[in-house]
Image (cartoon, rainbow, N blue to C red; front, side, top):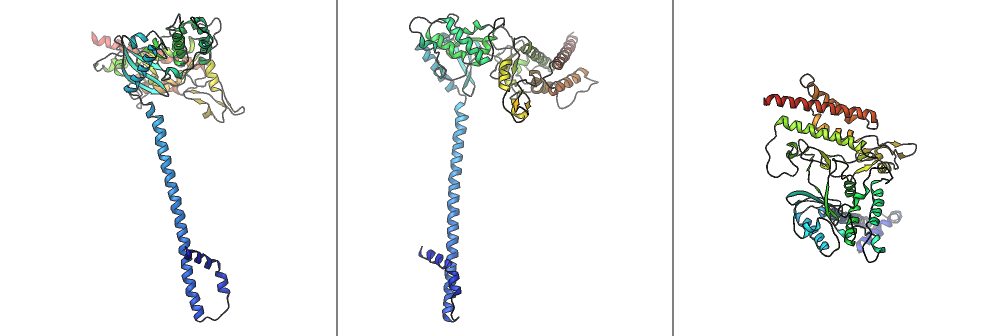
Amino acid sequence: MASCLQGAHVCRKKDQWHSTPGDLGQRGRWTQGAMGSLWRGCVLWKLGLRTCKWRILLLVLFWFGMWMFFSGVVFVHRTMFSDHCTDKKSKQILEGVCEAYGRGVLAGDLCEELCVSRRVQYRRCLYYENGKKVMEADWRGVPIVLKSKLENFSSYEALGLLDYQEGGSQSPWDAVLYATLEIRSSLGLEPRGGEAWPWGRLSGPFPRASSRAELASLWSLLQQEEYTFFRVLQDLSRHVVKVLGSCGHFYAVEYLVAGCAWSQNLFPQEALLGLPAGARGPSPPPDGRAGRDTVLRIALSFLDMVRHFESDFPHRLHLCDIKPENFGVRGDLTVVAIDVDMAFFEPKMRNILEQACTSDEDCNFFDCISKCDMKESKCSSKRVNSNLQVICDKIFRHWFAPLLPVSRVELPLEAELQHAVQVCADTDGSDGVHGQTIHLRLRSLLSQILQDDSGQMTGHSR
């Protein structure tokens, strides 16, 4: 330490020593030698100080990097593995439902068979996503799907109506009125007179709800947008999955063959063979032509669903997350929407799209797209694409627009279908008249090809 201070002192006195007059004899030589030694000490002191600083900096960077790494590991674990779908976790969740049922906290028309007679048997966990729990079960030998937006019954907002009424039974009409207000908010619909909305059906498994457990269970179900959507359209649409019953905050829907983006034909074999959904056991490989005809029939059902959602309700229904996994197929090859978390009627769709923007990219809400008004810096509330356009792009293009074009001479109808699908996927969906023309053209081509295939199969069978 003393040598370093001495070296620093010499560095500061450099100019004075060189400016001192005197002879250049022995004293000068001694001075030069001392100066050389001290200068070397000064240089080594500076190098040591710099090395020390670099070591401290590297140490700090190392610890910061380790902190970032372990924080990332914890974040990934919490966001991915905490929602990891396991049979053990799913069984614990259902045991919690039954324990609450035993204490009289919740109720439902499936609780007795789930928790007492055990006619509802858990089979496997399907998926967990953002708190949503989805499982497969068997109900008297029939496969069903159990769903809930949240894991625990206590996680849902309590029904305030129960806090204001003491003793006796609760009025079911108060609950239905409360439910109607909730539906109007969640679906973006006004329950005006003259509209064909079956609001009374919202009570579902509790047509004469009177106990606190029944009303609390009904309220937990009505806080799940997907359940209310299915319930409202229960008997109005064959393209919406059917609700079979409930227990507390879990509700059961029919099990269907769901699509898969990685499958060659987007839907598994049992759907392509037209077998009942959930059929067990191995199935024979389909004949090539029969498999293609099944795809054609599923495509026709998609077109029927598109027309139905756009024309048969008081408001147009927009599908903002179109992918094979969100659709199922019944045994009669009817396409069914099985995940409607991103489905919105026109009033709510307009509210979602109308937001601040600086470019058109800011106006993309998943598969529902609008344009940015640069003068107003606001997205248009009108959607510029359509359900049909997205289905053509994400589903029909996979089936009918392969990489290798079809010969117009050998297969003229197939070539026309490829071209029609391409036009459908690339056309602005805001033009309703043009969209109807494309829809009719696709339906006509699919029907003609299906009819020709059926004729050829009949001819070969003779």
